[in-house]
Amino acid sequence: MTMNHVNRMPRITRREFSALAAAPLLPQVALAQTSAAPPLTTRAIPGTGERLPVVGLGTASVFNSDDEPTRRAAAQVVQALVDAGGRLIDTASTYGDAESVLGKVIAGATLQGKIFVATKLEAPDAAELQRSLARLKMAKVDLLQLHNVRDARQSLAQFKAWKARGLCRYIGITSTYHGDFAALEAVLGREKPDFVQVDYSLDNRLAEERILPLAAEVRAGVLTALPFGRARLFRAVRGKAVPDWAQDFAGSWAQFFLKFLLADERVTAVIPGTSDPAHMMDNLGAMRGRLPDAAQRQRMIAFVNSL
Ligand SMILES: NC(=O)c1ccc[n+]([C@@H]2O[C@H](COP(=O)([O-])OP(=O)(O)OC[C@H]3O[C@@H](n4cnc5c(N)ncnc54)[C@H](OP(=O)(O)O)[C@@H]3O)[C@@H](O)[C@H]2O)c1
Image (tube, rainbow, N blue to C red; front, side):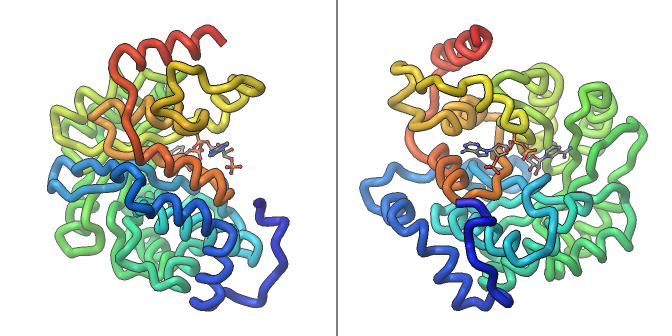
C-alpha cells in the first residue's frame, strides 16, 4: 500500500493511529508473534552490551514532507516495525521533514522509549541539536551521529559533552562517500565513538576492508546504510526468483540482501529505507531464522557478480 492510496484524515490521534496502522498488517503481525515464529535476532552494542533488534528503518528520502499522507504512511511503517519487535529508526536533520514526521508519529502512538532513535547533525552545533530534539519531540535521542565525516581532524568533543549531559545515550559518525573513508577511519580510530554508520551492501563491500575491522578494534557498533544500494539490488534481480539454495534462510530478495550483511557479526543492525509497510514487514523478516554461513555468503557474492 502506498501513501497515495489512503484517504486523508485531519490529524492522527492515538486511537486512530492504532486502528489505521495495525489494520492492514494484522495477518503478518499475528504470524510474526506466534510462538512458532523463530526467535528475534538481536545484537549487542559493543560499548554497553545493550541488545538491539538487527533490522531497523532508514528515513533518508521516504518521509520528506510533513503532510497527512506521509504521516499516515510513516505511522503504518513504524507500527509494523514495533509490532514485529523492531526498535531502531535512523534519521537526520537534513532528511527533509523526516524528524518532524517521526516526532508526531512516535508521540501520537506514545512510542517514546520503545523506539531507539538515531539522528544526525551536520556539525557540533547546539542550535541544530535543539532543532532536531524539538522536531522529534524528545528531550534526548538514543544515538547522535556526526553526518558525513569528511575531515580527519573533526572532533567529537561536543558530542561527548552532550552525551555526558544526557542529551544522547550514544554518539556516532557516518559516511557513504568512499573518498572520505580515510577521514572516517581517522576519526573512528581517534575518537572511538559508540557507532559508525557506513554504506554496505552485497554489491558494495568496501566497508568490509576499510571500516569494519577498525570498528571491531575500537568496539564501535556498525549500522549499514544503503543496504539495497538505493534499490539497485532489486533492479538487478528483477524477474528472477530467490535461488533454491537460499530459500531456507531467505524468503524474499530483501531478506537475501539483508541477511548477507547480518551474517557478518560485526554488523550491529541494518537500516533499510522504506515508506511501504509491506516492505517494512518483508525487511523485518530478516530478523528471524538462520543466517547464511561463510560458504553461502561466497555463493551470494558470486551470484550477484554474475548478474
Ligand atoms: N551518510 C549517511 O549517514 C547515510 C547515507 C545514505 C543513507 N543513510 C541511511 O541509510 C538508510 C538506507 O538507505 P536508503 O534508504 O537511501 O537506501 P536503501 O535502504 O538501500 O534502499 C531503499 C530503497 O529500497 C526500496 N525497498 C525497501 N524495502 C524493500 C522491499 N522489501 N522490497 C522492495 N523494495 C524495497 C525502497 O522503496 P520503498 O519505499 O518503495 O520500499 C527504496 O527505494 C537511509 O534511509 C538512511 O537512514 C545514511
